[in-house]
Length: 427
Image (cartoon, rainbow, N blue to C red; front, side):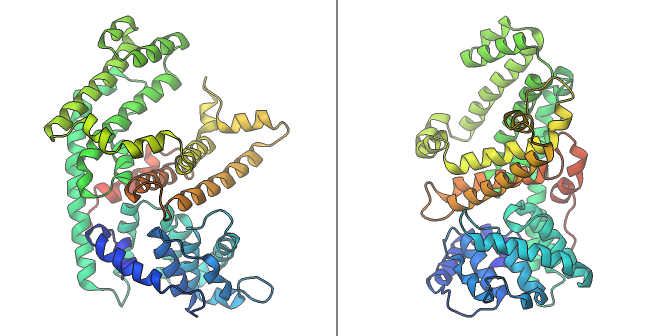
């Protein structure tokens, strides 16, 4: 039931109850109990997702005398799928989970043609994007449809999940409508014709990080920040001259409205939009009875922690930078552009092919995910709330840059954005 509640996207209503239930399971977790593969893997995944570090040795009992996973497991597709999902919660040094991913991936791919339509679709979805890497709203949309096909599904829970999804979708539509009005009022497409017009994608990006309804203000502020940063990114990458960008950088560092007068007109517009945005944020927070200084003091420990570039932040940076560069470096190098990670690797290791560089980066991305998993286990350096934002941002990177640069080529994510923001769930 806990797994269904979480995957249906309604766990935020039952956080306390879920924590109590999983703590009870953890207290009785025993590697020696002979659970079936499905149950053992499900318990392991649910506990690791909760930040409880249970041992992966629980899967040793599914190996044969030669140290390989038992061949008979290949017949248990449901168990294999559960093990595949659980193995994505691994950390560095847990070789058995690496072996589990390799074993289950091959086994599930081989079994696809013999599965029922429902189970085959479930397997394809998991192979494409395991639960650990999937944006919760996307997983909820997918799992609502899947859960309704289970004979044993709880009708009340399913109805509640559908209602909740549609209510949240209406809330998100209203938020996006307000942000879009702000975007149009700023006349972005006229002022910055060279920049990518991606306000919907920016909102989707931020929604992936701040999911729960209570973070409406955070979504509003962060979408504006991300959208302005996108303009700034395009200004530096594809528009400004070196001299203009130097002046812009110095002006931002001075943080003075009069600095705009010293800039070329195009750079002045960029600077003023940044300056005005932060003034607007201050006013917005004052309306809510908040202030930057109060919140800074309240969360100073977490902010200081982030500024020290801990392992989980480094891992997020690796995932974002490498996934982006793998899919966009060819296009970006067709115009004047800073060297991507691919070009830097080829320069540093002469004689290496582009394919070898990308393969190396993919391994680094896998290791970065393991570091995120490790940092999300108790005892945690800071509250889970902050760690979940980082985890969710890594999921956003996976959604946008898995196969292509879907932020630049936004048509590639049109369907998944529509599934979350415009297409309601039918009853």
